[in-house]
Image (tube, helix red, strand yellow):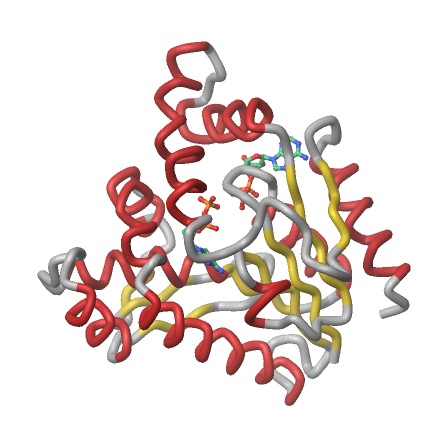
Length: 229
Ligand SMILES: Nc1ncnc2c1ncn2[C@@H]1O[C@H](COP(=O)(O)OP(=O)(O)O)[C@@H](O)[C@H]1O
Ligand SMILES: Nc1ccn([C@H]2C[C@H](O)[C@@H](COP(=O)(O)OP(=O)(O)O)O2)c(=O)n1
C-alpha cells in the first residue's frame, strides 16, 4: 500500500496532476477539495445557513456522500445524485471556504478521508496498491506519514491564468481579474486553517509555474521514485 499526498494552492495543478499520477501508477485518487465542495452544496440544498457553524457541522456529519476514487472518472455522489458538476459552480466556489474553515467540519471530513485512504490498503479500487490524495492539509494533517509528500506550487500569475482559461475559456485581462476572488481571496481564507504555501519538513516542493502539465506530472513521478515507493 502506497500513499502519495499532494497539497497546494488553488490552480497549482493538484487535481489534474494527481489524477494523472494515480492513473500512471495504477493507484486510486482522492480529491478532498471535492468533499468540502459537496459539504457546501449539501448545506445550501438542505437550507442550513453557512454562518451557523454548529448547524453546518451537524449537517456535514450526516451528509450522505460517496466519493469515487477512479482517477479516470472520480465521481462525487450526494444522496444518490451525481454532483460532480454542481459542486464546481461559481456559487459553491465562492462559499466553500466558509465551510472549510469550520473546524468541526474539518474533523469530520478528515475522518472520512483517512477511512478512504485506509480502505485502499485493504483492497478498494486499487486492489490494495494505494492512493494519491490531494488537498490543502494532506501532507501535514490527514496523511503526514505518506510515502511521498509533495507541495505543488505555481506563481499567482500562472494560477490566475490557468483558472481563467478553465472557467472563461480565455486569459484576457478582464477574465483574469474576474478569477481573482475564486483563487486569491479563497487561498487567503483557506490559509487561516491550513498551511499550503510553504512545505513542511520532509515535503518536496514542485513549482509548476514554468512547466506544462506533462512536465509537472513527470516532476511529481520523480519525487515518488526518489521516495523509493
Ligand atoms: N503545469 C501546468 N501547466 C499548465 N496548465 C496546468 C498545469 N497544471 C494544471 N494546469 C491547468 O490548470 C487548471 C487548474 O488545474 P487544477 O488541476 O484544477 O488545479 P488545482 O486542483 O490545484 O486547483 C486546469 O485547467 C489544468 O488543466
Ligand atoms: N484538504 C482540503 C481540501 C480543500 N479544502 C478547501 C479549500 C478550497 O477552497 C475548497 C475546495 O478545494 P479544491 O481543491 O476543489 O479547490 P480548487 O478549486 O481546486 O482550488 O476546499 C480544504 O480546506 N482542505
